[in-house]
Each structure stands twice: as C-alpha cells, then as structure tokens.
Amino acid sequence: MSFEVQELSDVIRIIVLICFGRETRLTKSSLKRKVENYLAGKIKIEMGEMSEALREMVSEGLLIERDGVFELTAEGNRLSKEWRSLLIKREPVLEFVAGLTDGTITSLIVIISAFLAKLPLQMTSFAAVLTVTAAAVSNFSSFMLGGKTEDVADLLVLKALMDYSLRDIPDKEERIKSLKIIKHLFIILRREITKSNLLAALVCSTTTFLAGIIPIAAFFALPQPFGFILAIIIVGAITLTFLVHYRTKKTRVPWKITLLETLVIVAVAIIASLIIGSGS
Image (cartoon, rainbow, N blue to C red; front, side):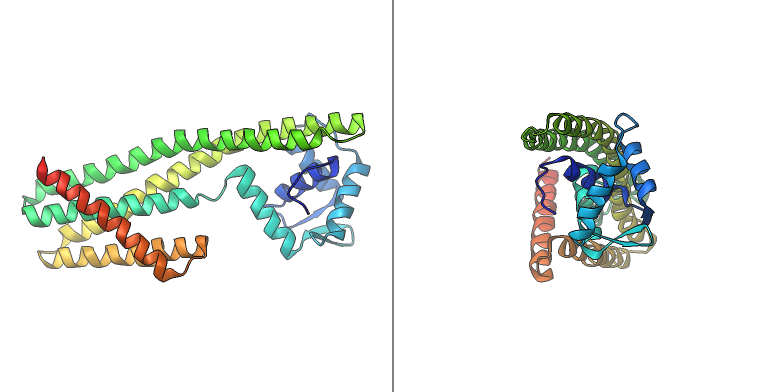
C-alpha cells in the first residue's frame, strides 16, 4: 500500500487500518459501520466501495479473510500502528523521554546541591518537593499546549497533501466524495488529538515527578553519605534501564552511542545548573 492517497479506496483503506485497534477480527459490515462512525455519520460508505477497498487490502497482503471475517496480517498490523501513530499520536515517545530526562536532571541537581550545602533536612526536603512538582507542572502545561499546536499543524499539512492528490481523481463524484471524507476524517482526528495530548501531558508530568521524587526520597531516607550513594544508584538505574533502553529501542541506535549521548546531555545540564546556582 502506497503512502500517497490517490483515490477513494485509498482513503477508505486508511480508515480501515485505523479502525483496527483493540478488536483484531472484524466482519465487512462491522468495518463499514466503524468507518462511518469515524466520519461521525456525515458520509455514507457504499458496500461496493467497502468491498473494493477490502479486496485490494487482501490482495496487497494487509488483510486476511476467513469465513467473512477480516484480520490484519503482520504487515497490515505494522501499517495500522504507523497510521495511528501519524494521525492520532497515541504513542507519547517524546513525552516519556522528556519526563525521564527532566526528572533525572532535577533530582540530581537537588541531591548534589543539598549534599554539598549540608542544609537542614526540613528546609531541603520542602525545596526538593517544590522543585520537582514545579518541573512536572511545567511539563504538563508545555506538552498540553505546545503538543496540541504542533500536532494540529502537522494534521493540516497532511490534509493539504491528501487534498492535493485527491483533486486529480478524474471522476467528479468520486473526487467530491473523497474530499468530503478527508474533511470529516480530519475533524474527528482533531478531537482525538486533544485526547492524545492530554494523555501525553499526563505521561510527561507523571514521569517527571516519579523520576525526580524517588531518588530524592532515597536521599533523605538514609544518613549521609549512604543516602547520597543510594540516590545516585537509583538515578543510574533509571537512566540505564528506562531512558537509554527506551531511546535505543525507539531510535534503533546502538545502546553505547545512546548511553554516551544521554550521559553527556545530563552532565552538561547539571554542571550548567550548578554553576548558575553557585553564581547567584
């Protein structure tokens, strides 16, 4: 299946791929109903149009049909995930990485500053919780507003590209229907984007808070220097187990390169923060 959308059946096939979520086995009638639900009932899909799209998907190896029930193949499942990720933004990769990074850096700055300054426990603990909470709240608002703006802008660009391709359809009736489907599809997708951005913002803020508060709690739980050593071990575990492993899995870059890159970025951020803090 080509990425370029050139005809009505291409539009229907994209929506079919999106419709396969939690349900992995669907009949033709249920798929038709789901496609029309995705368009909020604004556009009616003819059974012949649905049959043609499904027949093409079967011939391309995206679907298999058994006794009138359709199921995604491995290739179809991969494309379904990619289209859902592109159009609905359900996988908060950036938000998870940003949350881990911000939480780790914030906790290290607090821990190193508290260890060097040897401030009273009550004063330090209050400032630590306040700092981590502020970072988490800041990430929530940033990703909620900034993420939605960026995702909607990406959707508008993608819609414009699809509109441009569909305007070349020779048949006037098919061309008008395809453009209407795209229009209503993207209206629904904008609503889905809002839900996805809320989820992403929650993931980022929660990850930031947990990655920051757990090492800090360990730091205050034991007498020094044991608390400091335990906190550094926890930060190292978070960095290696979650941040480096997750980034390596998503970027498919060797883990040694990802580890080195991550350590350099974290170290530079911490050193810069401590220098600025000591100067003030």
